[in-house]
Structure formats: structure tokens, C-alpha cells
Length: 288
Length: 252
Image (cartoon, rainbow over all chains, first blue to last red; front, side):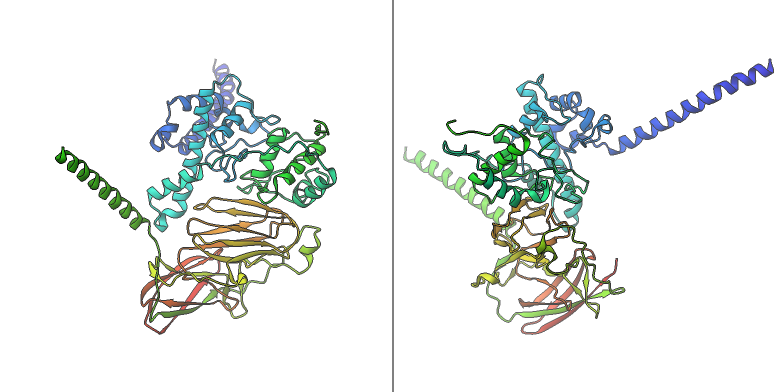
């Protein structure tokens, strides 16, 4: 009897210990998570818990982007790309010259996903849902700006009204660029395209477009980032000429990819088509 | 009828007055520095010393095949200290001065606020530009550089400057010390100091600075260095006299 009792205890010890340690880990991680969480409702009505936009975000985005959009969702570790931290990073896909997406840019990204990336498209989302989510992530970005400004400049006397003013300015876009369609006589000139490519793109994307031009590229947060291999990797924003034109002209904020604001429209078109040539995409031909 | 008209006019005038006074109050609140002719101004001269062992200049490992980047050896300008332990590239300014001389209006193009990309370096390492004034950004190298600003109060920018583009201009809306980098040549780092008034100076290779035409009074001098941090010091300027100031920055 006594012997049996001991063996039962022994049998129970391991699972009990395991169970207890799992419980401890869960509690500790829950506490850590709790400590990172601020009340969004206290910061802004646009992102308040319980609002329609908040619920949409929880249902469609939070798994990767995290409950508060800090890029720390539970599924994030399974991804090859780091989900955007809306608080601390600018938006990459824009159509303006001021580094800020228009609401349409955000809606396009949310609705269509990243064509070849890990972000799925949202065909089940209504236009209203997408619009609400666009406002939501833009507001998180503004709150992130406000947080950083407060942290750095409040001690120097920057007051709350100025923090609000500047953070609002940081997420308010100008008009998007109009992509001027190339004239009817425009033809891609591969020699001109290659010259422009080597002068404006090759330093990073490599002389043959293999993404091997830079030694240790970093994003704005100092994390390693890879330069797109234009030949064998698909382009996240899609290879559509108009989208390529925007990427070249407006750049990709938060990355080393600058805006080609000083080249002529014609030169940008030549670069668009040379890039498409590198990708093996069809080019316009005479008599189009 | 007449009375009604007068009433309407009175209300209108009152509203106009209210609007004007609000606008005035706002502009008064917004108004920072006011320029005027300074008579009987004094001068602040000083030196920035370094407390610690003189650091050896750090030569940059230039990881690019572009010839122009190998024309001259490149050294980090993050911390430049003379043999006599004086700190170059420190920025001295009068904190919160509201009245004083106007910004210099250089007639010669070469004297206008400029930052050049030359020999795969930014030249100068620290460029000072007045609030709202254009900063000339040159590319003397004839290769692709990108001017990537890490600003917070001002809109961050990342502009490609292919070799064929020799010049562009940048403008800033708010005073700020802005870090600038080139992603293609990551050792290229500079600072753009957007100055809200003309009393800003960058120390030279002897750690020296000089602020001229300072209206007499007592001020707080602010000293900023990119790695050594920020310190302040009181200084009193008397008409036509020179006030001497010594700063010491400690090694980190």
C-alpha cells in the first residue's frame, strides 16, 4: 500500500512540475504583455477598444500585426517578413512626395494585400471596412509619432499642443502624384534604360539587378533588410508600370530606397521599363 | 431700418475685431525670433575642451569599388578631438534668444548654406541653415548618393542624387538637429542644424567658436555634440565687450 502510494506520487510529480512551469510561463508572459499594453481609448477615439475599426483590426490584422498594431502578433514568429509596426515605422507603399500614404494608398494595400508577400488580400472586406482600417493604422502611426516626440522633446519644452500638431502633420499627406502616362511615341530604349539604371539603381540592386549591390543594408530601425533581387524575386507592390513609377518617384519610406524626385518623367518611365525588362515582363512595342 | 443696418455693421465690426485679435494672439504665441539691427552688441568667444584620453582618428573601412570613394582616406567625424584636447563639431547656440541680428544674407553663392557629397563624405560634417532658408545640397562626386534625413520635427526625406544631378535644395520648417545618412555609403553621416536664429556656431578644429553682435544681456549658452551630449552655461554679454566661455565635455 505504502509502496503503491509512492509510485503514484512519483508518477504525478513530473506532469505536475511541467504543468506548474507552463502555468508560471503563461502568467509571466501575460504580465509582460499586459505591461506593454496601453489603453488606446485614452489616447484616441479613432483606435478605441470596442470601436468598429478596433474590432475589424482584431479580426483581420492582429494575428500578425499584434493587438495594438505593434508588429508583435502571435503569428509573427512564423513569418519570413516582419509585420509592420504601425507605431514606429513609416508606411512603405505611397503615392506622394512627402513620405506619407494617402488613404487610397492604405486602402489599396489592405484590399489587395502584398501581391507576393505574406500579407493576404482582403476581398471579404467592404469598402467601409477598408476605410475604417486605413484610418485605424494611420492613427496608430500618428500616436507613435506623438510618443516619440514626447519622449525626445517634452523635456526641452515641447508642449502637448505642439506634439499633437506635429504628429498630425507627420501623417497628413499632400496630393498624390499624377503618374503622367508616357506619350504615344514613347518607346523603351534599353540602352538609355540601362545607363539610367546603373546611375540610379545599380548601387543597391546590383549592376545586373540581382539585389547584390549593398554590403549590409539596414532599414530605418537599424534592422537588416534585403535589397530586392529584381530578376528572380517578385516585386511586393506588383510589377504594374504605374505602381513601379510610384515606387521610383516616391521611394519607400523606412527603407534605403530613396525617392527619385530629381529625374524627369521620361527617365522614370525608362527605368520602369528597364526594371520590367530585368523582371522578364512584357514591354510596350511600336504601334501600340 | 437704419438702426438695424447699424446693428448689423456693429456686429460685423465686433466679429472682425475678435477674429483679428485671435489671429494676433496666435501669431504672437507662434512668433519665435525677431530680427533687428543690433547696436552696441557684444561677442561671445569660447573653446570646447575634452576631458578624457585623446581618441585616435578612426579610419573608415570603405566597402565599395567606386574609385572616388578611395581617392582620399576617410575618417569618422563622430568625435574629432585635437592634440590639445579641443572638440571639433560641437554646436553652440544661445538658448531661446528672442531679439537679435538678422540672418546673414550671403551674396556669393559659395557662402550660402551648403552641404556637399564629395569624396564619399558629407562636407561639412555639420551644416547650419536658418529656419525657412534653403540648404544647397550638392553632389560633386558624380556617383549615386542618397540624402536620407532622420528628422522628427521636420518631415523625414530620402532623396536619390544620381551622379548627373549636381544640386538640389532642402527647406525645413522647424528648428532641429537632423541626422543625415547615405544608405549606399553607410559611413557617410552628417548633421543639418536648422537654426531658429543666427546665434549658432560650430566649433572648429581648435574647438573654438565666436558669436558676434549679441545684444547685451544674460543668456544661457547651449552646447550640443552628437555623441558627447548637451550642456548649458550662463553668460553675460556687455556692450562692445568680449565674454569668454570655456566648456568641457567628458568622454563617454
